[in-house]
Length: 306
Image (cartoon, one colour):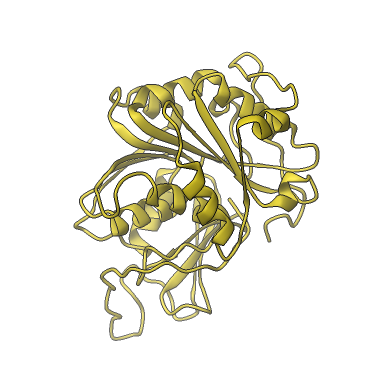
């Protein structure tokens, strides 16, 4: 879930031909909108007027994902661009990785990994199987990608994932506009750490605003499990002046902070990277969240992501 931000990345992918009616396979109408009730609400796939074959997925009116079928390396949402930088720094350019995505949506980041790192092996956990069916039909995946979508609760799938097998675990889990409580705890983070290789990385998209109490608790939670933690966000969000997305990245081994900071600062939508003592200051005494104390992320104020 995020507000839309336009950006660009290089790359290309196979583009499905239009049929005789001017529609692409899956029935996306000439009006540029498909609506369907899925498990998590009313899903709408809406054409992006600025790009020839790009689409936004909304759930109950809130933007969830943006996909450019002609160029899967194009990332539009601000937080997904943060994730994209982390993917780019996960290994040598073009080297395949093994990735586990918790939360699927329109599979934007999984498409990015597949297009930018061919032969990568990926698994996606998405609880809303009706949503997955809609996305597969209307926003088809390249058949050559090694990408598997599993229906089920993200924590259950994470708990059953092979130990020390993933280079990347990416968490973008929302029920409506909030992260479920059982996916915010130390116990959940420990499952992510278990799934990672020793040099693997865990990335999380969260939302918060105001005093940022939820974000501070999540920093404390990851610092209780991982040796290295960094936070990426728009300075306006960090100052509590706007409700928005914050991306956390954690690892057992040192993170490429200098290069990450350079990329985040040079992005069309620049942000700040907080780590080390500055991140401890940001935590401001917050304590790790456990299964017994966990709560969902705060609900966004009306219009926060419109």
